[in-house]
Amino acid sequence: MSAAAPKKVVVFDYGFGNVRSAERALARVGADVEITRDYDKAMNADGLLVPGVGAFSACMQGLKEARGDWIVGRRLSGGRPVMGICVGMQILFARGIEHGVETEGLDEWPGTVEPLNAPVVPHMGWNTVDAPEGSELFADLDADARFYFVHSYAVRDWTLEIGNPNLRAPKVTWATHGEPFVAAVENGALWATQFHPEKSGDAGAQLLTNWIGTL
Image 1 (cartoon, rainbow, N blue to C red):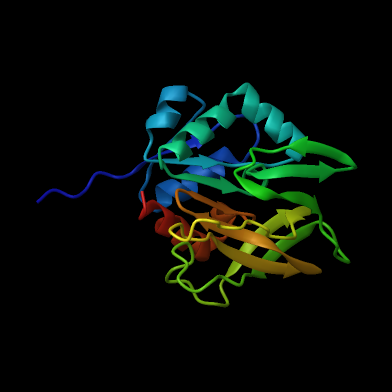
Image 2: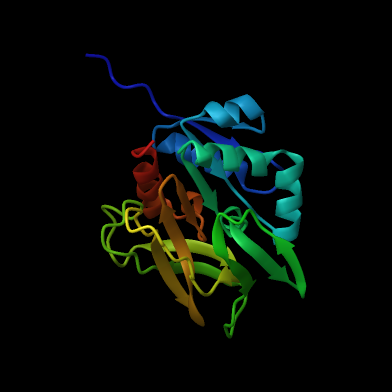
C-alpha cells in the first residue's frame, strides 16, 4: 500500500511576510510547499497560508493588488482551508487602526486590530497561550508550550455571535501581554495565529502538523 501523497500548501506571496521561513517550516512537517501568488495554484492547493509582516494598511494594499482578498474569500466560500499568521491573521478582521488611521480588513471576523496596552511594546519574544478545550490547532501540545510573538497591535475583544445553533462557535485562544488579546482562532476552514509558528521551534512544528492533518 503506497503512502499518501504530501499535502500541497501554497504560501501566498504578496510581498509581506517571512515566506521562506514559512516554506521551511511547512516542508519540515511534510508538506509539499510552493511560494507563489499564482491564482490557480493558490485556489487549487490543499491549504493556503497567508503570512504577514509590517503595517496592517500596507498588507491589505499588497493583498488586494495580488488578488489575495478575492482568493481567500473564494476558498472559504468553498470550505477550502486558509491559515493566517501574524498580520496575516490581523487582516482577517473587520478593521485595523494604526497611528489613528483606520483601514478595512477582509471582515471574515468582526473586530478591530488596535494598539496593545502594555508597559513594553512591541510584544516580542516567547509567551504561553490559553487554548480552549477541544482545540485541534493545539492538539498534543502542553499547556505551558511557548510560542514566538512579534507585534504591537492585536484584537483585544472577541465579539462574534453565532445566531444559528447548528453552527459551531469558533475556538478562540488568548494570550496576555499587559492585557489579554486574541492569539489564535479556529473557525471551520479558517485558522489563524497572532504568533509565528514558523519561528516557534518544536511547538510551532506540532501546530503546523496539526493544521496539515486537517487538509
